[in-house]
Image (cartoon, rainbow, N blue to C red; front, side):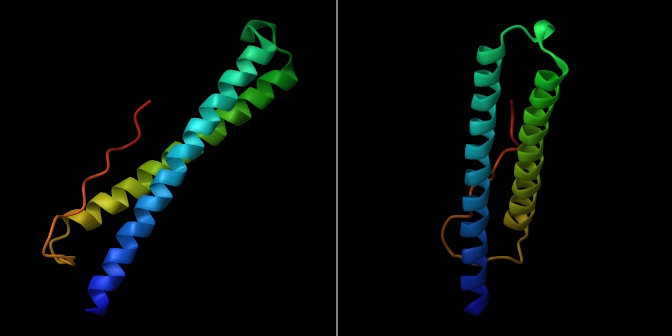
Length: 99
């Protein structure tokens, strides 16, 4: 019984963390779009704009890497037949992040 509750909570927490990262990725993409709109053509950027944009890209890619890591952990645990925490539906698989 404790194992059932623990597994249920783990899956719920994992899904919440993945959803939060999905929102952060969307926010990062919007920041990058806004940056481009503010500063125009990248060929005209000074080193400060280039550096800041590279930072924005790096942050977004970090979120994507973490998303994929959590999704892989979730899917591995989901497919582990010893997890068997429910008699109902097996949790749905989460796909890696696609741009």
